[in-house]
Image 1: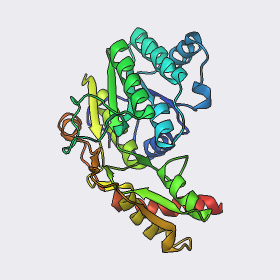
Image 2 (image 1 turned 30 degrees about the vertical axis):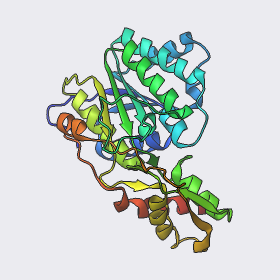
Image 3 (image 1 turned 180 degrees about the vertical axis):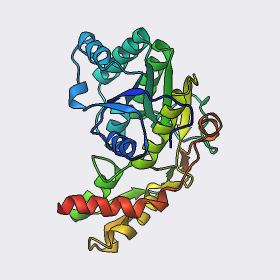
Image 4 (image 1 turned 180 degrees about the horizontal axis):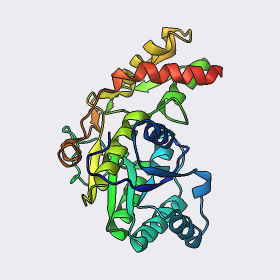
Length: 296
């Protein structure tokens, strides 16, 4: 719910048709009071800085929420250099107009080599292409726009769009075997939960708070890809018949160490009073919505 004394803010959503964008618009309609200006991913594929600047200026927004690149990473899509250039254009436009740039990133920026949860001060060190490009985009946002918020989420899952849910359940429906990694631990985030967090930040910005910097959010219970799939398939078994032999656990090579991309979320809790919630409590509803859409 909005904070007492907070003003409504006008928000331009870049990537309003992404899982987080859809959840943000739906949740705002139910609980919020901010004015959201949607812009789809296709409408954000500017070819020049002039086009990007025009979109930002015309929106006359107090906050620009950028969901484009995080969604591409979670959906397994290739991130291009032009995507980073577009972040630069948006950052420059926000800086010139005085708008806040709320850029959503991912725990993928980290290698997973640390045994403890990652804090915001840890340097991104991922060797993966997507993680490296996400980290570069973060640097551009922070370097160009003073009024910036960078929020790193754990892997986002949803019943809509390309993400972990669709990739796993889609493979099952096609009768493909699933080979899942049990070596990498993270903190999955339901899109609706991510939308809750983003709206909490917008509420606080409406009070005049200027909490510029980087923040982490992940669910309160961690999981490997295999553990996540186990819970996912337990829910999916109510809607779709499959053989347990379709799920195979990827074996670790001898001497390999477990990787960890869990996030320390104390900073966002202390600054914005955002509490963590478990992803397991909502996985059943997400799977139900997924199959309802498939049948529709």
